[in-house]
Image (tube, rainbow, N blue to C red):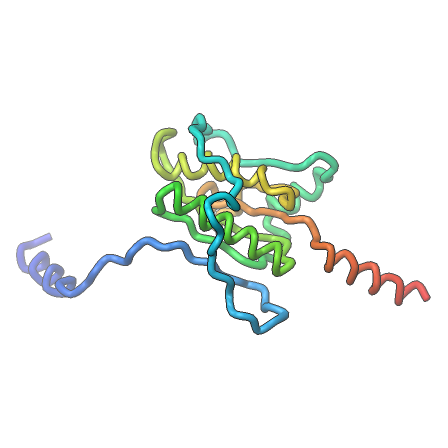
Length: 188
């Protein structure tokens, strides 16, 4: 880069300010109600996600979990990105404590809204001790603490690859009831 090019670049970038890191939740499924999004107001005692020290999971180990009784085909389909996403959460460049709070609020809201398939973006790393891998390691533990999580796995490259994960939630009681009602009408 010549001195003139560098001066032009610096001049062009003079008023540019970096974005502040923030959690962003994107609801991809239209909400059935017109209610405003719920802001996380839980007290520290409501959030049951662990805060204790954990051993980082090696980068080469894929994030993957399936509850007992969940068929392998469900996990395979989830891994292939074949379930339509209902919402996503971006945890990039956030402190672990913020990730914990934002994940807890996101999962509570997803269950309240009867969402089934989620995407959480946690970031990639090249080092087992990097921040992104620490968040990834906590995420592995935290997601298993939610009773509603049936399975989770690494996302497809177009959704973030090893820097993101898909999450499959159980059907809510209301969704199960609606399903029973719908099938009862068809069998009459």
